[in-house]
Image 1 (cartoon, helix red, strand yellow):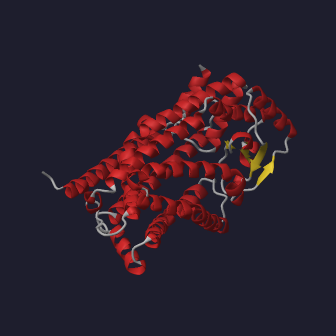
Image 2 (cartoon, one colour):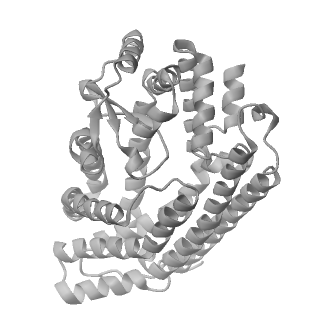
Image 3 (cartoon, helix red, strand yellow):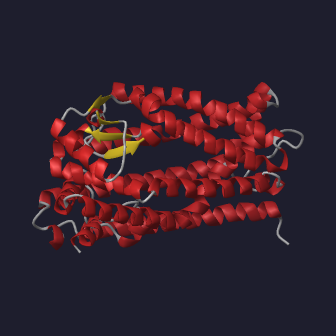
Length: 419
């Protein structure tokens, strides 16, 4: 019978290799598919999308694909470094020698791990913003704003993250056999709390929100929302153009505190009919309760994940098989949590087509709602403009779509609307 620790090590290596090979295969398919169709605009879009815009979208997609390969390699090396090469074990020993056993060491271990991971990913993040996005004309972020956003994110992460981290680690130690259930309940409350305070507390720290001043547009969207039986606290414009030329519109908040938010870039791209149609699409998500359904699935999967963590955290082979020597007479809560966070994405990747398919199904339903409650041709026109202005490729590979696309490709989406 194979040693459980060795079995864990071999499982990690096998699943990591399967991940790498699958992602490389998907990336290769995407690159070939987009490159092969770069020279000609698809027939369905020949009269609406210029060849120049089509080729820009192809080049943008190919550039991001190349960066994703670097990211993929970096993630794999980092994972092996933390686990089988002993990085996490070393960090644990360093913090133990410094602080001794206790909650302080546990929190320091998690915070140190997070900061080191952020530093590792920092160069690639900089290149994506000031390299890829800059080259294709999407980046409006200055170096000063980028640093400011990073520092604000760090401070907010500490203010919101440290208390819940302390609570989770305390529950893992003091909660008994059902600590994972108590932790799940605490995390559900925490997630809802963050969603509740985000519109008025967190988001204004990064962006400026001003009331929508276009009286005609405001009257149109108000009438649409009244027809849909939907109430919102107000309509706001977000200065998204400070950072990017990409555009969007979204709802945020709970209950009567819900807000409708338009990127300022969106207001310059779409006319009144198109704006109304885009808002109708967003209303479709609420009418079909997509947000609640996604939250329910998220809560259910997190419960299963925490139950699994509750079991593996009690197994010595889980630690030793992943390159960590557990504290035999101490608390291993932080080690278990970090190891679980490191390896879980390897396994969940293979079920990602299920969540992606569900998300695309929701988009089709929201489109159908918008077609029935607004000008359908305006929605088609708006989506074409958004695909073009955001340089979204019209020719993605079908298998790549199955794994990664949360929204249907333009060809499928517009064909469904035309039908």
